[in-house]
Length: 418
Ligand SMILES: *Cc1c(COP(=O)(O)O)cnc(C)c1O
Image (cartoon, rainbow, N blue to C red; front, side, top):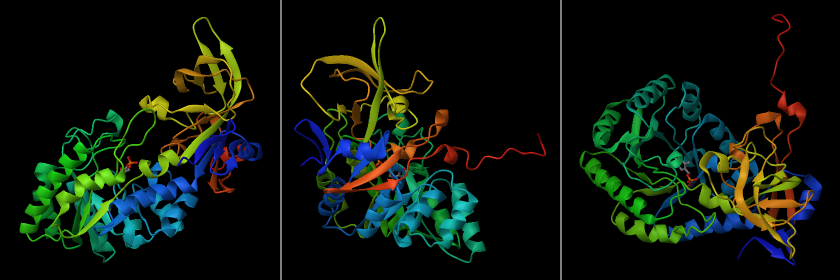
């Protein structure tokens, strides 16, 4: 079942005509489907039900409080990569004891904040970070629970910006150093080792890389157990891909089928950190066509959503399906769909065949729920988009559109200086 589908040529979000929501909130606008999110969470829960596990949703994929609140209500944890994400997760009601904290550059303030809130564990990415966390924990008279993020040197065959488990990447601890670092961790008074972590990248569309990476990690796990280390948590990261165009990524159950046999007879709890595969296909970005334009060798739809609203096409060359909100039987045209921003990289699609729409009509950019709003910016002093959540035949605003005032909220003209 698709929660974004046409009825009589009109795009619906669940049971609500998208045009109705646009009329109320304007564009650019993100719309999320509650039903889709729930379906994706269930798919993970069911796939991994036979082993003890925690799903720690990767907050950076989409960090809206209302969505985080859905996850909190369902008992999910959070995978965070900053103090700001910890703040959001806690505000939304996610339990501190289900929060894991990754990231190569955790600041002193962030570490202190996480320690004070007794999160489940820090996924430590370097030797220096280990000492830093130990020092900070000592000051607070606490024990920091940690896993080491191990870099298994696996190529996940994805865009180079989102491959994180290669030898040349900044992430994690080289697997050949892992035992040495675990021994250091064990020797530190304010550190308690409780797990292993890996995350090899994002938008992964085949299980092979997962399997190889997990085998390496399990090999390490077996060795660590021999050194009397307590590994209660095996955190295998996120990264499952979604369908943007014609990919057919594994489903959570495919992932479970390939990984669970490797985990037979291993004690401890599994942690999964899905982001994109939970929210990616649960969101769309609506935009209005402002102008159409024809040059010698190109046709353009100039729309009111730009790379500040959705940077994926610009940043990764990503493909997003783009569909008319009201679809009719009419001529088709090949166009570049571009935003209003003063950059040639500001496009949503290139050379795309689509219905010949007119200014004032609306487009839906599909699969925009992950790394869409969360990567948006105010570039060109554009207020960020509004966000709406649809559930059945009801919907609610979950983030107001920013105003011009919001843009300058924190800015100061220093009268004394000028
Ligand atoms: C980004 C990230 C994730 C989520 O990745 P997806 O591809 O969105 O599932 C999980 N874990 C860590 C450590 C991450 O940095």
